[in-house]
Image (cartoon, rainbow, N blue to C red; front, side, top):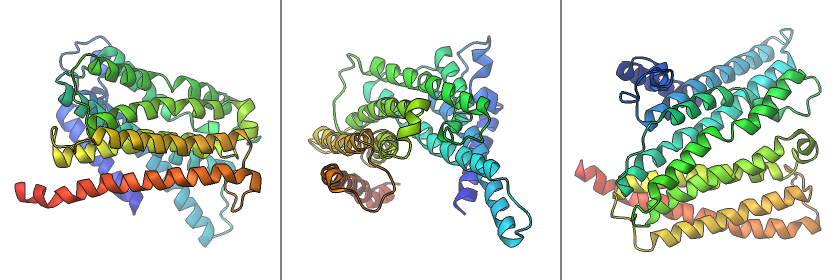
Length: 336
């Protein structure tokens, strides 16, 4: 049901983009990228939404295929599923889908930063090229989760390895440098929203480093089943995705000039707790602490204890951000 809901959402996005811009290719700005004028290109948010629509739709189809195959196998065991095909479909779905959430959430950065700084985020050809490259590579890097599967074709693992390195740069660079360019000497008032947005860009970019380390074959052989893996994706989600969502929620509920006094300090405290948590995960992975274990050896528990304190701080501040949004809903309903 969740998958069907997301698919309907993707189809509605696609309908809107096609109706407004004339096609998904034009939503990605290909008419400008390959020789045309950049005057009639879609804004950055539409470019990102087009990419997310394409990759999420394909991921959902793959997930549906393996789910139906599994149900058929349960009902009719004689109809066998190729295990390697099933695993590839599962990882194609899962890896693509979770990546798409971050790519969609970054539209909060593209929309809100220009509003609070008074500077537009321009859709350049470099920006369009970066998003086109990422559209392709996000769909092809999932084999880096299968590096230890000897049955995988070597060429597929090689593509996953190479694209894991290359995919880290295009969109992250244009987003990171674009954010810094807009912020530089803008005279921005640092409040909760703007600070959360800056944290989100940092979390997205810095989270790439442990991810690429784990996608390296020599490292993956010894690190993939350790706490390093939760460390790298918590880096993305706690410090990349969630601050984007919190910033959007608070901006939507309170507007540009209504974030609470000291909100920037609250956001920085969230950063400290989040960094503390993911650092403990990464340190545990560096020390070969396995993931998915119900119990840890005594010498590992110091990192668990520190991480638990940091997690409590993250949960408390997350609750505060959500409460701040929910408290404004009655007023928003009255206003419109």
